[in-house]
Image (tube, rainbow, N blue to C red):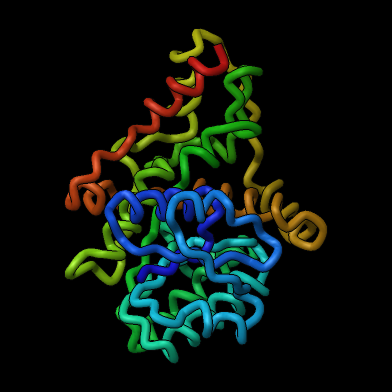
Length: 287
């Protein structure tokens, strides 16, 4: 039995679909107030529980061999304490494998961008201290989150770029991340860490050029100075943590190019979607 935490989310839902299609027994951890109808219709068992309620996790983990967690909330209650509760409960339940979705480039500097990344970094360190057979999945920026409005708006012909926009990254498709999570949840000998991105390496300005080519429109580009992001980040952290996280990550990604590629995808037979393919589809939908 594979328990998916975050099963009703964008990434978790795709992991569930992949596992079900592979013929695996899947259970989704669902909070007491969440509608699980869509999961049940796929043949997925439901386990009611909450990461913030440690006592609720033991029944959910009964009979579970593998945990895959994609849950994220950008608050310490879930991203740090909740993950700690889940790991401790998994250890007590005798879970054999623990697949955790972190982020490419994670470390102390990225952790300062907000509670979500701080939680990921702390969770990684906790996992490494346990005897669990863990797999840490570290994807680069999601195409569906970083190549869409308000950063890149194909309909309005506008883009907001952090700094000069000349630092290359490998935007990756959510479906490809889900496929890798599902694969490592069931593979006979998975790696401890899989850090990867999509098949193309693009700077933000190359993304703008790709949108312009796909839409036939000259984009208006607004460059946000890194100094402004640096000054605004601590203020926004208190009043708009979601916006602060985005700005903090933009600042980090502007300073740090990707040092990974799509090898972890290709090695297991996943043909990753290029970012330009996503951009072309987005432009076509707008048209």
